Length: 187
Image 1 (cartoon, rainbow, N blue to C red):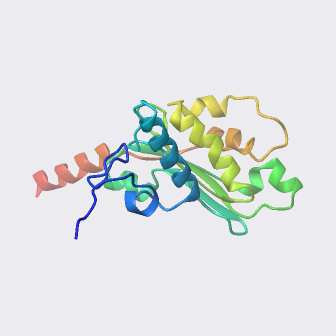
Image 2: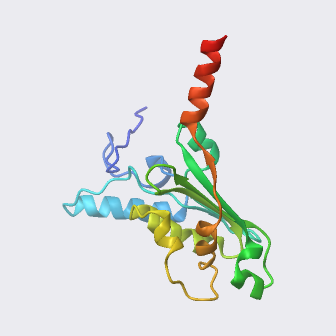
């Protein structure tokens, strides 16, 4: 029995091309579509890869749950210093006009570069709101680009202005590391 291995261009060690479950990609329709674009590009002389792509996640419940990039646990495990921005959907004017104020918006922002590391929304239209943040992440924009944008009022995406204008909490891994080191030296 031959086990096929797949590289970042979705080329295999076995004859043929692997797409979908064989490639080991996350099992979402949108990822299968992107896998197709990778294969098509590479068969057409391009050099497209699957590495470092932002993989959005959306669960179409009521309300929706959407996420892209790092969450708090992943950032802590990777020792990434971040600021956490969070607001309830009650702060979103469009959610109020829809009488759909359940949920929240949350974003992790790199403490040094101000780039958005991750975003989670549990809200009406969470997948649509997340897509706006995903484009900002892909473009390498600082969170201030969304905070300072003039977005149509009232829209769900406009809630990103309130989110990134809110007071953030910090998780500075360097402080935690130096405090732990200090405790070890004093013992």
